[in-house]
Length: 138
Image (cartoon, rainbow, N blue to C red; front, side, top):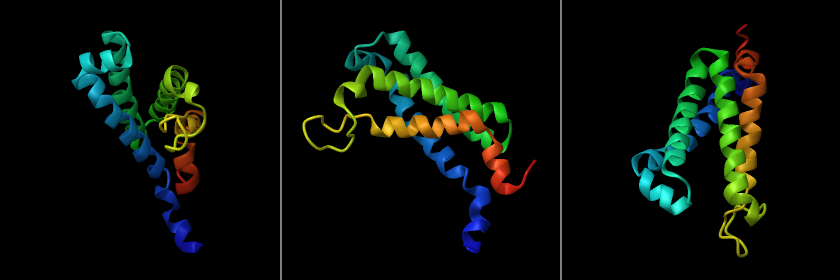
């Protein structure tokens, strides 16, 4: 256990890096190929572009918050939460819970989006207190 405690100071980076990677990865097609994504998703061009830019901003904010301001971490958590609620409402809820390609939903359920919301809300509610708690920073 002592070995694990030694690493606890960097543990907040695991979900930070995961969230940043997820949102930046999914944002780039929205920004680079806005027209095609707009057609595929049946959404207005401007909305797809704005969502992509907001996802990139959220990814950068969650990373910046790991080094600096508490507000960057909290804002990123709120951004990710809003984006995922929209994704669930528009796509995933109609396919149920299961995100594994089982049954006839094609793996489009909402379980992973709900997990992203839970982690995002943890950052929104706790901010960098997560970092301070494990590293002893005040």
